Length: 399
Image (cartoon, rainbow, N blue to C red; front, side, top):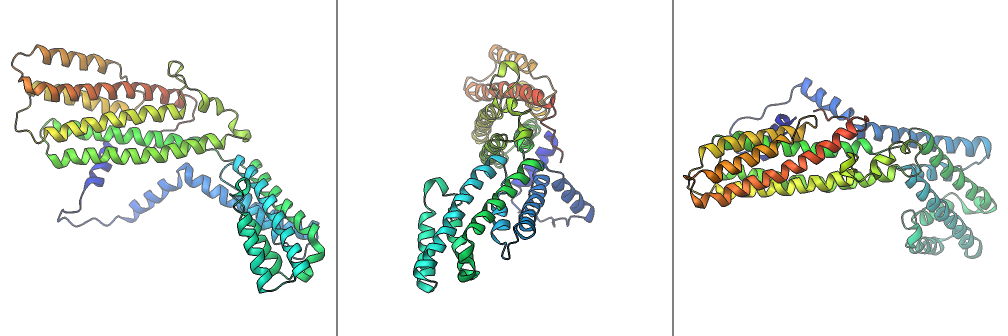
């Protein structure tokens, strides 16, 4: 995994200045990439949600026409489409908002049409009131349904719709009920796998940077390479923001979800000692690891400007430890604790080395300290991932 992440890093930092022609991906490569995307949980979730939206809209239309006998059954499928959201909790809350907003829109249309008639000015008035009412805080998410419902009522012929006020409101309720029922009963969506993928992706990228540092530092490196490592850590921080959003979605997806009862305790746990850390706590620790990795990359970048020679013993032993940390952060099954002892031994040996230049210690100490902090984070995150892996809720990422 770390090797793959390192290759991805090299691709991302390529500035395109190479004169080599870019390879055209083969049909097999394209097919493999498409297959990989289709196997991601996000893709499967999207497909299921699309199908559920179609089912909810069709069921609502059928019920309105076959059972209610509606001649213009447009409100039911429309509100059904509005109600199938990414989480069951959102479907319930937005469904209530849609019902209230659409009912207000129906009532508003009939009031304006009955007392003022239908014309360009009254149509504009209905839109004005509907758009203004959509700013009400407790229906803000679906408040625009007030105005759009007015458009439907006026556009479908007000004179024919006027005697059917109760029917229109009933159709709205049917659509919302269909959307909520379908989203609740047919594979209610959960976001645990997406959250786990983000956590694993960040760990793999950290492992890739450490593997690249180990390979380059064992021989020689330049400022551009150190700058690439630093920029990669900044990119990780941006991905971390996306990971937080996905984790919040995963937590929301458990609310009012019958499938979420089993895994809810996993999201709510927050104790490292029990190896049952929550996703939020894992991301907090990952954020710390990225910060220390950024500091390490910054130290190497600053050191690249120095003309002094590196101590061969330090270079060899430090790069060996970096390589082990890189592999450990990408594989939760590896033992991490012994790396603490190796770093301590390296520090002691360097301190006892009388031939080491005094002005080298600030840089060497910074590199050892940053790596020590990363080891601690790797140990915690790996333990948490093992706990999740043992329950089948955190499948390893394949590329």
